Length: 338
Ligand code: HEM
Image (cartoon, rainbow, N blue to C red; front, side):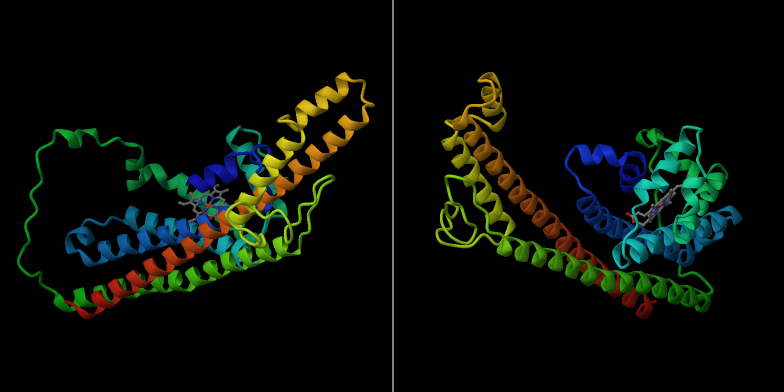
């Protein structure tokens, strides 16, 4: 839901204003979205397994529950298909330029349906099913989402006791089998998606490395080469190839710029140049030095930021794989016991 709030309610211009470009947004949203989505699928599988295997819960399942479960599953599976199919494995779709603007329009009673006409079908179906879910919401157990269970604080304890082995063992084992298949399917999806994600992160990391290796950066008065002189402190003589090294080097550049300008920032040197009438040659050169240094520093910090994102993506991919393996083990256990 956090992803939907950020992706649909927060305009693109706001995230751009805080320095998050489309590439960075895409990386974070697709990785966090895939993990969150798979966790939702796993949660749904667990709830369904409980509803099918526990006789008490099965008996109290109403028609409304069945409808709700189906619609919820459709919404979630369509959302996952959109994220994985279009944004993770496909070429990517910038939904913040269309769907998000349309969605905010609907919420503010100024809908613009034209924004949705060119949107890929999978997103259209996902949004339509989400409205259907909203329509049935008040008539299902989902109303509990809006209630604060504060009475739990003072209500008497509920004591649960195990009953005698339930009758109808054969029927139960069939249900258990179905639950095991569901858990297994969710686990297998995670085990398949996890390595893909980790691989994407590793590829991103290799791109950053190649980009850093290919750069030869220098600015007037002080030759600073990424593969040559003035290496960052703590890494004498080494090339800048990783995010942390880029950050360390950005710090060196920051210090060098301050040393060259006598502790003044680019803005301060600019203001001084303006005050001097704009034609002071030494100040003009100094301003250029400060500007180039700042630009270089900013691009190195960008590389560092992107590197951190790849770390996140690789970590989430690993987490997903482990969680999927645990679900597969749970499914095998369910299939073999009872
Ligand atoms: C009209 C309302 C909705 C709109 C316009 C909408 C739109 C979207 C979009 C654009 C994506 C792709 C995100 C990406 O790839 O980064 C997405 C993904 C997803 N949506 Fe929705 N959505 C809506 C309601 C819902 C609801 C109510 C649920 C769940 C009950 C839901 C569950 C999901 C899931 C599980 C994903 C995949 C994981 C993710 O990317 O977060 N959506 N949705």
